[in-house]
Image (cartoon, rainbow, N blue to C red; front, side, top):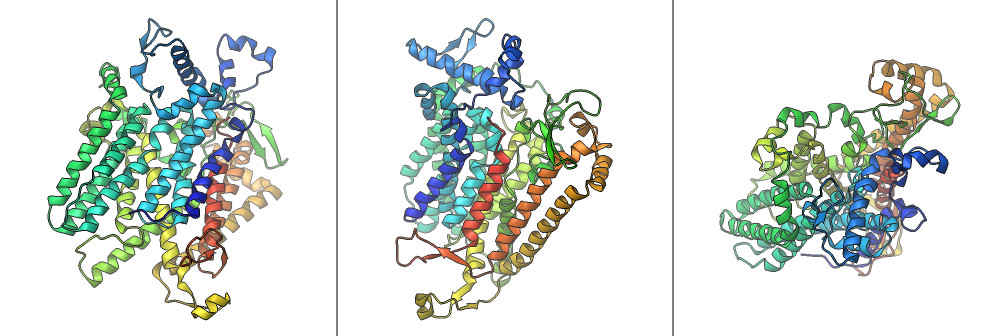
Length: 624
């Protein structure tokens, strides 16, 4: 089931660790802390000493919960352990309330040990890096189980781990800790069902995999965020149901599909049982929750993502950021601090920052990179084309594993991505969840469906890379073995494929679109007047933008870097697609077996670099 692990896999694991460490190095290897201590000075008694101590504006006021809430939890746990007590009850809020039962402190989560042994000022940074590394590594493992190539799995891992869903959720450590385990759980489900497909009509005992899946689910529940556990069970159940249906179709008998379905239910039961030390007392607390039936469906749908937020899927900071306190003046070509808004006031939506939408950046962080979106789309198109070709040639009677990523993964995750968007944007379809799932009416955050959407696009992007490698890059063949051994640069072009033709035109289109966009942005520095006038036309008709900016000049100045980066990544993505059609290779020093090629298509490491740079730029500066 697993392919042999070699140095390339260890390198991928190292890269997946290095990237979050690079993003959070000031709060791990450096002298800073991830704790937003500056937020304390917005409240008494610290407020009275703010001027005396020279404390300025909070770097990101949306991160206040990390110091006001989570830090207090961890400190209370440490004090209780030092006193030899179990922190069952918190006496410091009102007349006291249950503490351990609430769960969101993650006291029983194994990685919380970092908070018990490291200084709290450093523990948050290292905890975050460890969880983002797990997110990427687990996604890498899942893609390898789906038989994606290593570069595709690596890009999927980077996309998932550095997505803005995770970066903006760092303030909620329990959300990050709970979300990282879903890809690994899906990998276990895939292994269980795939083994039965390989065995045909011969049954087998999946007990070792059931135990592994239960351990993973148990770890996930101990993270302490029941909403993320609910999402994990929903997505895992959806994936398992789709795969079992395919198994049923393959074997033309429900026997083995139903048997494995029973095993998977047992896995869930065992996993919930392992987490019962946290879930059982949490359930008692939840039953006393005031949220039960406290709001209507219409109210919850009103808290979903507004349709305008679709822009932030490609330009993450279009609606501003609580971590941005200035703008780039295209006239003076200098960075300027924000002052009063168009109404002569401080921004009422986010004091002294550029956020100008009613949805906060923490709620609406949905950016996963330009190239991953394109790769995901290519995966869907290629899988659809292959499916249509099969239908024309002969009826499909089975869904068997293949050397390339199984086609079923594309259709499953494409469907999940569409459903996630429909739920996140609060369409009428959300009523199915609100009325159909027990306890869902207590969850007032439809925007959190960004989590399954992010997972889906990461998977599709990894599959897309593998399709490109198989259908496009490998079309360049050496004329004969002698020339290959002599490393001569003489090649013949194989029969053009659908995907090859598509990426040729799409690559050029994206490249030139990005280049023209960059030229327009640079022209705005030379003749800013017409661009400021156009921005003023939009600004004057946007009541929301007037909350943050004084005029169209400020508005355009803030958007200039956003659009510059968008066009830059568009051009870079087009270049990657175009290079897939070229016989350009780089040395592959990491192969261990003679059968493996000692050269790597140049577009593959280039794609990894572009995805990493894109997401690092998007996430940089949001957290301390």
